[in-house]
Image 1: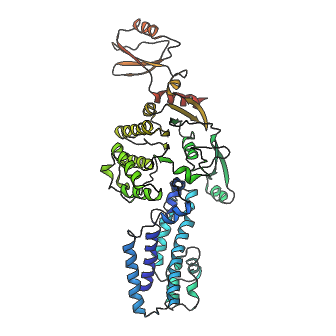
Image 2: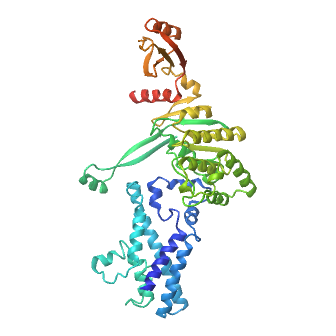
Image 3: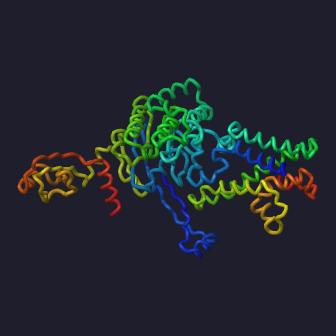
Length: 179
Length: 318
């Protein structure tokens, strides 16, 4: 549980540190008609999007908290410190960040149709993924369970990768699911 | 310049809303319909027009944020869309309704960021910043986060932000929106100063045409995506129907003047609009004195806002 909390906190904080300034909350920019304003800077658009939200200092402290919780849990669980495990862990962590970001971006297109109503939709998606992603979803089965790892992938934020990484998952290949 | 948008039409009933998810219906909005515009180097041009006339679209096309449907836009010898990075490096764009400052950071951080991203030499940055700080009074707000700035302060900071790289072309979209009289004057005086000092070309849209009249040498009126007027303000004032104003203070009674249109009575003075080419001032005064005792009179040209409001009204009804 502690590892799960630490993992979801870290995912959250990587997002805060690397995709702040409405880069992740792109529905705000779409809704306010500010998306094209990224073009007023003399640099490629991809570079603007990739670097604009990078704020390692302001988002850094919370990131340290997440890593500390994870390290504590990791010590308690007696998990192996092998290159393979560390690699799988890093890939899963980054994949989880991509899953959250991609889900926020996907839902943000609503703002093209409903600029005012959809302006904050990325925030709502972010909050929902953040809240659900912290909890173990083991008790949820059926369509709801499938939905939480597909349509609304809260299970991919931390629950499913953590299960695989700590060896709780019945599927040995489970650590590949999130990536 | 031609620019059309496709606008999705929403259904008015729940069944229509659902049906249009699968069968969307669009309507074409012609924002600009063949605007042909040349702005000379060092010129200050005001773009005016009623809401939805196409002013902001024109600014976006000039700044490279939008590509025209079919037309050639050339500015500073570049195609603003194809040569975007080269073009924007020499252009300052400021949108009154949207800040380019980093919202949660002090103003200073935004400027530092711009220095790095825009690759501005340290000495050029210091020189430009010193001028901007003095002319726009940035010292007081330098360490304040953008989100805590008032509208006027934000506008001044945004304008300085756009002008930091000392651009050759400045495009301002509603830079005085929501500003108080003092802030408005500061912004406009600053534009005048950089135009006079460095020959910066400025295209500005605004609804505050009284202020713009002092700044711009030329006004381009856009109406329904087309240029309805292009020339100096003096020429606009000479447009038939704009006339002059006559204020007469009487002993209380309002004269009925056949050659003038009554506008309002305020503080005991009656104001009329008349066309001097049709009815001369002495004729009007003689007509008034024949009816009432005229205690005082003054004549003046109508405010430019009134001239333009009259034009808008005429366009609306034709």
